[in-house]
Length: 347
Picture (cartoon, rainbow, N blue to C red):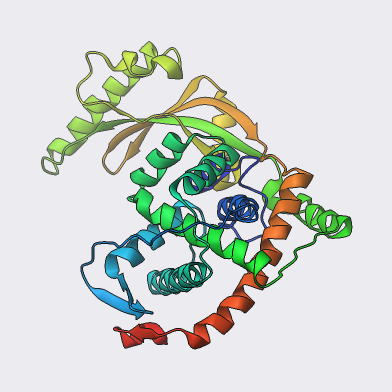
């Protein structure tokens, strides 16, 4: 019930402008457009790929091993950037294909003596963090909380920077976006129902559990807990001080305030909440595990911010760049040595 609200919270000006209007692509698209801009200014420098510790060898690409650890890290990175979808097997295969492409990109970059140095990678990551309203330290913390190492992000950034530069300089890829294209995409986004305002209820659940002690004792325990629930309700003043009202009452569990979309609530519960009004309690109610009370803290409307015209243009540019890069990669893959150690991943 709360997933919709969690998704709404993730909607900010730098993440919701979608290229293909799939649910989880926007943040990844913003980061990729940042890398594209940085890649166009990349100077020709000498670098070296970073090797990763392995547990099980999955594939070898041009003598470069890719391991289970690498695949797991890329899957986590894609999830953190909002670009994963499908079953676990599909996500794993997609992550592996991206890693294979990265090795091919890095090999082509090395052949052309075009590899980003540490400063260029750090600068790109800083721009990425700024674009999503955080700092490099904040981005690092977010990735680490999802089990993603910075080396996984840096590998992704390095491969993208170098290949974007090569695509423009060596393969003469020119990406142009006209005003009409921006207008059409912006109109499509503005018409997307996911950008409509979403009314939400702010609620806290107060539970007084009843331990199972036999059929004869249960009614007495429920009655005792119902009396304690009435005591709690008499003491309750506001959601902000909800825990204070439980002082002296045994085993009262109170959740943090959660935001629940109105459309996700049963109609009878919405009506009951509206009847009691914000700042009041609904209950007590007997549940299978004890006595329940719902604190109705308030109601508000969340409005997902619309993307700017510049953001839409950047993402269209990134989409075209990606299509051109895929054509180049397709040709490079034909001449690459790819040895799958797990045959099922070739299917």
